[in-house]
Image (tube, rainbow, N blue to C red; front, side, top):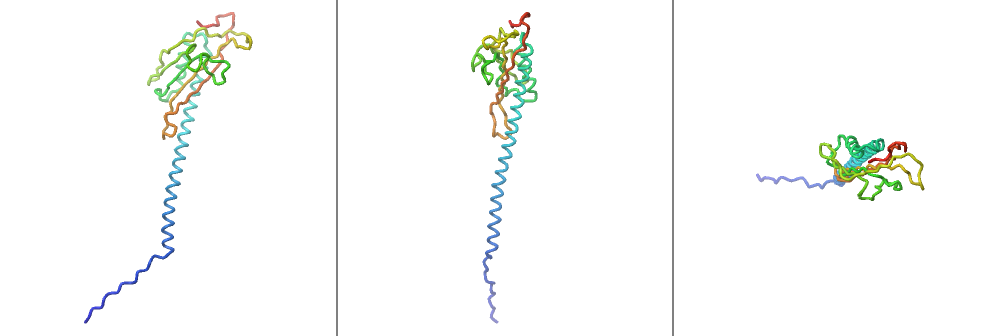
Length: 204
């Protein structure tokens, strides 16, 4: 008896609806990947900017603390270094090796940004400090002698009392690298606490 060949069922192409569904699933996966990448980038940027704001606040607070102490003791022999030590104390918990500048100087009374009276390089009437990784402040280079703290009325519009400036510069370490290594610089100026002109009111 002859063997009949087995007939295969006819090939039926996938319906149009199934193909559309597969394409839609693929499109959704691609869109999800794009949106996820975008959201991660935004989130990372928010974290980095938040940490940069925190660093700026800490450096600003340290600058104010140093200037406040300096203004309160205008005739102290360790006037400048005491201010620098106060700056470092206010930066507790931060990486001291990233402190790139601490300046204590006579501020230009006509400068809205508190620039040094001797110019942007702070060449005179200025003491510059460095900090070790352990938070130890150096002895400082430079000097500011003859600090004027004598009470009196302005002469020709010039205040007889000097103003102290404290400038702190810190290299920010960003956790996600968007704002990494950015220099944060904050300056605070304060008028020295005036003393009676009948007393010693000029530093040596």
